[in-house]
Image (cartoon, rainbow, N blue to C red; front, side, top):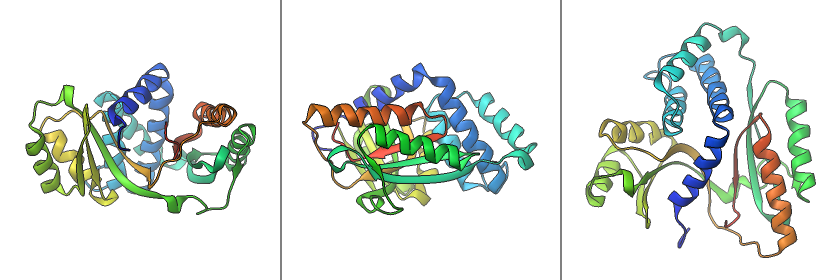
Length: 242
């Protein structure tokens, strides 16, 4: 993403999220419920739950809301019926799109996601049709304006904690980890008092595709907006060079 500001992108996403914070908290609440059902309420012994908690904190979810969600999920395990599903497909001009959803009704979710692709002149593909173009990584973004630590010191701390890579952008630092090391690295940064603008396990495209055709851009935005509005959709990854 040379020439891009990751923090600007994160701020854009977070501003959009702040306008619909209730939805974001609902999404994370579902993830907490599923993680507790699968591995129990103790994040020290539940790697998935620890990941979700890190994501919740990066989205400014209050600690008492997180703890309340864990307690509720622990006492209601038998009624948690959500299931993770992933869809892959193509937007205009072959833009690769991956959609992660968490649903209690797969037929509804599949129909809604197919509709979002179709309305944007795209198409759903078969599992694996575009995921090979992405790398699954833990990604932590730290805004320079919120970090007093020297870049070299921060890099050494992250690498010592198990990070794979560290990059400096114009207004932020990016820490990349193996998904299995994400919790340990983010915990080390948190314990050092580092504020994270974003922290999540994500799918990073190996290459980005530019769109210059106005019709294609309009159609892609239509698909992405429809997916963003769907309550079942947890995350959308694509290789469009925004």
